[in-house]
Image 1 (cartoon, rainbow, N blue to C red):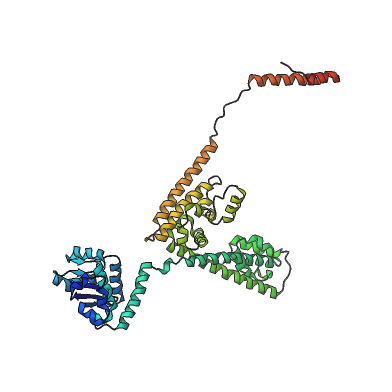
Image 2 (cartoon, one colour):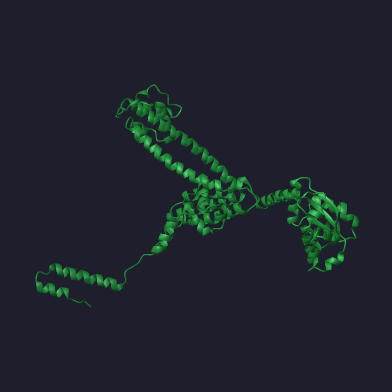
Length: 454
């Protein structure tokens, strides 16, 4: 009997010297207590060393999947096929079926074989000659790391932690940028208040202020790089009749430094947004197509990771981000919110108020499928997201057209005619009222108020 033994350094083929020892499974371990005893049970017939870690990883990967790699096939053809009458003891029954099917070799897998493998592993250093223990240890460690990395299928492009940090930083930048711009407009507004109403774009405003400086320089400053021609003419006209106060050169210098900060932060925000968009398309392309990169990134950030988000049902994805409103509604026994962060998706935004709840529910259902596909699927394309978005857009058009047609064609209502009893009561009321108007005596009034007409 031959034994196929796998190591991190290569494949070893052992020859069983005394097969009678395999019949006593419970006491087989005693035969491997010392190297001398082990050499009396098995003997190394052939050892095929791996050339590098890549070959070792390929062989180990094939073994874990129950397949026969190229190096193993080469060894079996080279050594075992010559002695086809011998049985081959292996540690994996599934692999034995593959070997028997492809090479027509008789394979054995039993409790005795498992105990034999355990004994060989304990005395591996003495049984496999010409392989230093330090080399075996180093190759085992390297192969363990490589195999673990392969099993985890780790990819730097799939790290969603970067998305969580990027979207948080983007929100912080928006807040700080808004504060800086408001401060800049208010500060420079004391000197040139009219320009704040003329230039509405914040970045163009800061660039123009940075180039103008003092209000008296407007006439000689070329602003065509930042402003349209008609806006530039309006700014120059407003500078001639401005009601702003005079400020010192030091004040203008500080305002210009603030404008520099706004311009730098705005440029960095644009760069960060492009980075976030690329990251989202690499990690969650289907979710990005469905709800957009910003909403998708906020959903991932709120859940903690893409895998955690994939564990949420569609109903939770729909109201994710509206936890305060949800608990308040449950506490006061009112209607629960219909949407959370998903409200800012473009599909929900272009829907009428009447259909926002329906579209949010449908979008959450399709988005949850896209999230699971992105988190657990092997493909990295966005075909499913594009297909589902097209279906939602068609459904949205149908709902909007249905709402318009129903509002144009109002249903006909059947006229309601008064009954005979109602007609009689109206006549009695008219008679009472006419008698009351004609009466001038209190007694007549008293009689009228207590009359009962039959």
